Length: 322
Image (cartoon, rainbow, N blue to C red; front, side):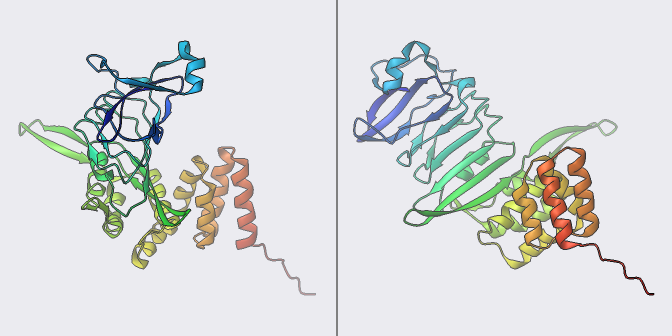
């Protein structure tokens, strides 16, 4: 990869990137100095003009394949990983990056320019490395996006060791609906995403407030979203209270067949195993899950479910009186 950059505040600011792979990994250092920021419009193809007088960093691979390189901007950007040293990204940095699907950064990143994610309608995942504490810029990013976003926090708690926290932030959007007889136009809200985006205080995630909103999600979101949200909390139970855990488990018991079908369609065998670990299967639910897995030809999951049925609900041998 080839990077155009400038020196700034005893560090490096990335201005443009060139390469052959839209999965971009920004280096920690350039010329011995930490990369601390990315300039406005750095990954946007809608920049008015290219800046002059920038310095150039390039890898050995870039030197060998210079003619095959393209400007990594706009629709050619698939994912971006910023190093832990990055503290700031400029305005409209990802403007028009409609294929950007994953963004990775650390809790050092606290300054985000206006309109940074304009047009990023396919951004689906944030990977956030919490190295210093619980605060991050996640709330600011979520505030710019309406679609469902899955967030993975990597929390470092011992040297070289970390734990994961997975959270689903559902989509939300507004729709203008006209009441023709009354000649009134009113706004109708869809999805619980706006509620879940309010679960931050001073840039810190409030897990208990997040769990308290489950009743809103049940009323407004599809079961495919709910099943992911539930198992992300059960399998990565950061600050999960017993009442919240019981509410999630109760929902699974009540809608077990539909939940299992969603997990099967996504080939999420890990979550299906969690259902077994928590003893959430009813015999009828398990039979329906096996039937659905067979219908969608998911052989591995069918095998797993059949094994669970044999363990949990073994057939009793009939006894005959002579």
